[in-house]
Length: 266
Image 1: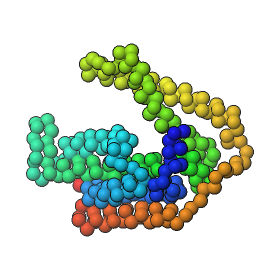
Image 2: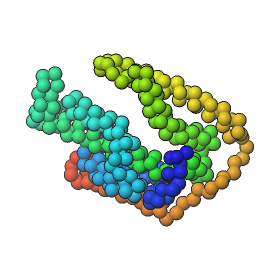
Image 3: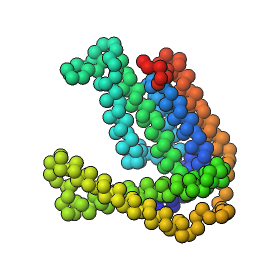
Image 4: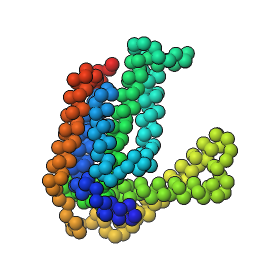
């Protein structure tokens, strides 16, 4: 509820755009980035995405707070790729069991930047989009089945609740002395136990939500809408921005000679 109120009162420019236009722009950028593993197109897209953060009312601190798992996953993936990719060019590091060359490092950096460039638009979309507005747009404009729309809405609502539930379970376990001290192995076991507790709680919440929605008649008969989902000139600018970002990223990579289709190999 707090998240919904914050989004409804958000004066950020991107928060006022139709969710479907923002979703379409994100898909355009993601498709382009998924086609190549070069670092130039990912760098260009990442540069434009960072410029968009003020338009969504976000800061770098909020970026880290909301997207640190994705950022760490991209960093780990980039490092793993740099030491596992085929060697080419001058050898930079030779640790015996693994080596890193100029070519493998370039591939790893490209993987890292591409992971970040794909993750940031998703963070932008979630941060400046109200779940109810997205559900209204999916049902009214995209004409998707009501069961899919309601399931999407419920999932987006539960994401925030699960984050709060994780903190609550962690504080409760630490109050009992579980997971707050011990060896690394003990801490890992405690984290797995906390994850299992979160999974159980998520299943319980989903079951209660499904029963409640069924009891209140969701999905039964024709629906009416309290708010109309509409497009505006801002949505045209959002779509144009997505096209420009994707086009500039591809053009820069082709001009630099680094464009490398994923199925073509290095």
